[in-house]
Image: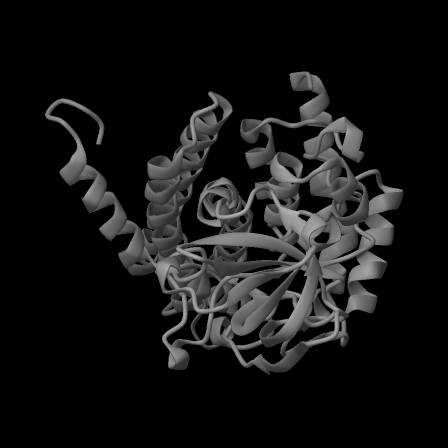
Length: 389
């Protein structure tokens, strides 16, 4: 895409988010476990009419073939509303699943699973995390307890998954299961016999349709043709999905942090206290100045990591660095915005308190800060003197 074409796409996205999506933020169909599927369908119909359904995807999937650098700009614009990525079919977990399917799936799997997902007519889930009270896999995937065993031309999957984002109402899921000494990914229809959504977790975030679920898989039979990629390569494919997904999370939530900052700035300019606008009080002004610094540093780090991925490098280390730096910076921004706005900041009168909750969860999702730092420290220990890291 040319620079002029990208600028035009971004201008249309900005207008769509501002004029069409933001008014839906008070829609009563948004509940404690995210927007209803009916609301998502309405938003996507509007995005489809505007020509803004998943424009980052390659042309053969209906998109405009954006690279990571252009995608960063698009996703930041879409993230200005928590509903923006959902409307434009850029949200997790579908966006990460689309990336993985495009890289690994067979032509038949692409037709069966990826094309409807790219069109925004279905939803998906990614089932890797397991219940902590069963010592299942969380940040440490080697603790995987869900198992799959071959049975003729099928595999049988048994286990429980937790934090299965969007599992309630999803058409299919990518399930990670242990196969011998390694792991394999399977494409599983969510209406398959043996799959039960046991409950929805009550979490501080509430943007994902279908919420975060605990899912039981009890003797689920899956045809061998539904293996995603190769047997015993699940951990490798997880990195194919997770490194770019960490970055796209940063992109989307950067847009939300920018929104919170803009609202807090507007509040500080208008709100009077002790004889002058809040912005003229040094304590308030400095918080907003720090926001601006964190926003720019985060933007630059996102763009740097996008460039690494566009070079063809896997970006494992770089995406971990970016995820840590950006999630922590955006959390500081959201926290300052609440503080600047005082009681209004903790109320539902603006979207700031929701953004605060969403970004707090981001410090954990796709790997907590501490796990990424631990992984980076291991890489530092393995590096030869003079090498990076």
